[in-house]
Each structure stands twice: as structure tokens, then as C-alpha cells.
Length: 255
Picture 1 (spheres, rainbow, N blue to C red):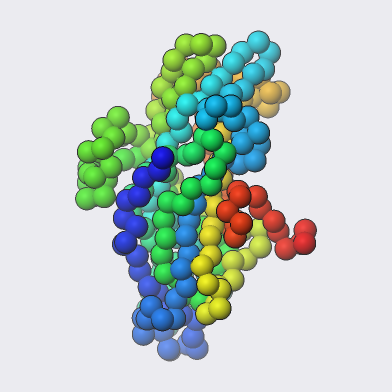
Picture 2 (picture 1 turned 45 degrees about the vertical axis):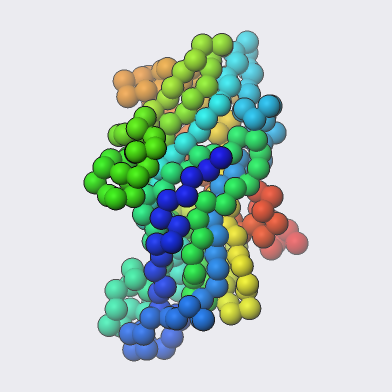
């Protein structure tokens, strides 16, 4: 299951135009529908067993039964950043933003849509967002916390077992992520509906470079492996155009 928060809140930004012509906001008829989905990375999908992610190494077993993360300020950044800088905020011209959103990662290997918005035709090079520690300072956050009070003060939550013992991993990481597309995302009036998929390789989160598993209990706020797990999380995130909605990146260079 996944959660939708703030789906209807979106900004239609100015289209690409000559300098000085960016004081008009694009109308809906000029925009295309873009959806954002979430999925396990292919490495993680291979470890799916009965809707859980199961890993075994050197006699240890790690089973993930829930992975949830909170993102906000989800934005598409234009490839050409000097198009709309005359008389209007560069930020406003370059991207659209959505408020705090809860992503429940589907652990069955499926691809699930979370958000959608109307985006003006242009070429985009990055997906930007902030991994956000949830608090009640925004209306959208209050709605999430009402349904999931366990996420208060948390940006990432993982539940599961390590060698048969239940664990809960709570992380309060708050930082911006910039995910560059392998190929620029081109949206024009004829694009129709476009889907982007955000993938996370969760099989690498609690793992050392030599393949040994990390006990999540050692990756908490005072844990010896906290920095390593944080770095693993950062490296695990990708985003790409996924028209087939199968969670596979197919760069143009590969045909």
C-alpha cells in the first residue's frame, strides 16, 4: 500500500521563452501530466520473498518488512537554467514543488505511483528533493502524523528482523538530494503522460563493502555504523524516466 498526500497541490511554472517573456504563467493546456512512482531497485527486487526483502550473508539473516521515508520539496530542475531569469525567480522557473509526502516502499517488487503533476514542456536534468524529518509544522505533516504517529521526528523508518530478532530503525536524516537523470527528460506538447520512477537499493543499506550484513541496532543515533548506513542510503537512490513502469532504467545510449 502507498500513501498520497498533497497530490493536488502543484505549481504550473513558466514555459521556456525568450528573455523577458517569462512573466506569464503557463496554462493547463500547455502542460503535460508527469507522475512520480517508487520501487525497489532491481538488485533489491531480486531479494524479494513473500513481500519481504530477505538477505543472507556469513550466517546472518536480515529481513526487511517495511521501508518508509518522508520527502518534501520534490522538484524537477530544468536543463537550461538561464531561460527564465529575467524579472522572475530562477527557482520558480526551473522546477515544481510538492510538500511533505510519505513514501511506503513496495517490498513486493512492484512499481507504485505516489504523485502526479502538470509540468510545462521543457528539458529537465535532475530530480531534486529533501529527505525530511517529519514534524507538525506543516498541515501536510500533521495529516501524515495523524495516521502514522510513529513517524514523529523521523525521516526514514525500517522494520524487520535481524537473525530472527525484531528491530525498528529510525533515522532523522534531513538533507537535499540531487539525482541526475542518465538521459535528460524531454517533455513537449506531444509527450502525453510521462512517468518517473524513484528507486532505492535497500539491500545495500545495512551492508559493508565486503558484503557482510550490519545489525540495524548498531546504526542508530549512537551506533558505530550510523555514518556507514547513512552513506549507503544516499548512494542507493536513483531516478529515471520509466514509461513501462517496470522499475528498469533504459538509457538512450543502450537503445
